[in-house]
Length: 622
Image (cartoon, rainbow, N blue to C red; front, side, top):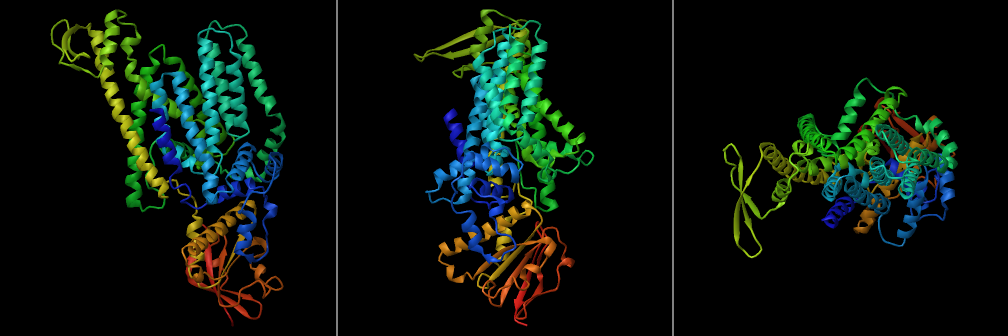
């Protein structure tokens, strides 16, 4: 069964992996992991389009992990581990005839599959193999998990590290409750998993803080602890901090850099709604973005209605788990961790003024715990009813009833209405004989039996529905109808290549490195579009293409003499596209004079304000 779940998870993550164009964040990943930096990008120069793509996105440059870390320290706001791993991954895959998008996204997809296995082990350790399997199933088909697995970013690796840290956390909790001496191997695993998470993404620190808080609560709850428990806890927390000591100065510089200031301040209760929407996307994703109100509104109602029903069903299961002494401690541990992370989000949003909810991907911090709790609540609740948790009855009859409930070869007749309830059981033996017997059940046990059967059947239906909805959401994700980006590079590339037989010049205005990365995504998408046409035998229809970055402060001067050399610019006529993010139509000048021999006139039809503003100019001889 687990093998099948892993295969399904891999299919859902690797299918059409390179279908969508690389966007801003993924271009940053490509640039830095291929061994380049922003200093390698030619700015304020008009060059053939191929000069950009072949120079920056062909094959990885030989670079060590310290080299990449140094580049990240000065030109990014992220820790280095994922980028170092991706650099080595690209070098391994370089000889293969695969697209750069597939190579970049395949490693996060692989980490996404590994995270499914990690959640299996988390629930297996915390609850049972059945709960582990259901947790893995739910993460395998989760729209949120699939979306992050198909991004060339570090989120799935961080999810994997957090899930493994939670496995160690549950083992520590079990040792504390059984009053066993601290197991050095478990504490060491917990330290390593959390330390790795810190070198992957800064938000993994929030997960560690939540785990530390949870451990403190667990240890204070116990009246008697094994010797050296507090010592092991203190040494482990100190070890995590010491292992991160080399990167601490860089982290503080990143937090103070302008690149970390893009998160907007919160708008009243909007972050609460956005956080709720992120939770909904963990179980269902329907076409909403870019749709008309007539389509988007019913989709929103369906999504929130389905997620609300799942939340209600899961809460019933969690209450069942809470009332049984075997499952209460791990349930409390995962709930405490999740609520602590949510509390940290609220502190950052409303006290520090940074709205983390603007990007659903940041909710990866507690995503493994949500999948684990959901799988356990649906898979284990029917096995632990409140009446049985109270210990009624503890006779062989109870064990017999447990066997009856799980035996699929038995059929059950209606319970008699007599003062002593009777359940008729028909059993098929191995030799083919049929044996009928009657069980005289006390009323509390009878109620527990019915509750267990009802919860188990309801859980199976809920899980099957979750799987169906997850696969349906996957269809929308790979079709680019869900989790859409703020702009679509391939859409802009199609606009630039509107008249493929006419030479085209694309000029992208920039202010900072984010604008440069966004412009590179346009250049890469346009080059891929033209390369696809060449591979299909339409290369004769492709005219020359040129690309450039222009400083916003010197708008339009790039095309003025002496920069506009005849040997660089194509002879008229040609199309000129000016890409100016967030610039309104009225601010585009009606004419651009390029030397005495070329005049570019604004085309009023081809102005595209959606996503990223870009305007077409027709360049002719005056």
